[in-house]
Image (cartoon, rainbow, N blue to C red; front, side, top):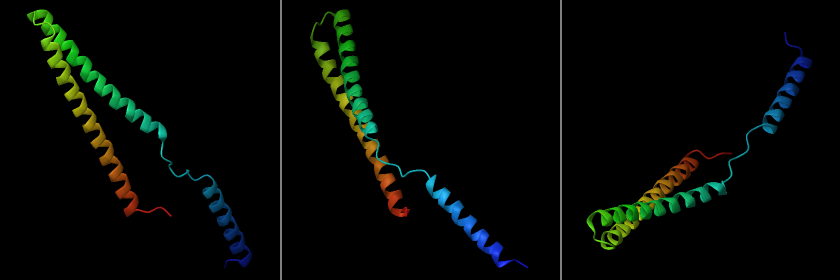
Length: 111
């Protein structure tokens, strides 16, 4: 039925196909250091945005109500608190993503 020579040819072809698949297989994912920089910039922007919004609201209310610098000072501190809270929320989000990836790697080891 099947010639032993055909079997050897199929085995050789299969070995060549496996070698080519291994050669063109996607590389394992390495940690991207740019994503850490993006995270840092995101947190800085969140803090500065909170301060800027607080300053703008306080300055605007001071101009309308004539309570110069008091509302601006209060709203700057409120903006700082809001910015810090947003930064902490972002850090928790990233930490939970990393924990989920680590748990997935532990349950499905590559190798």
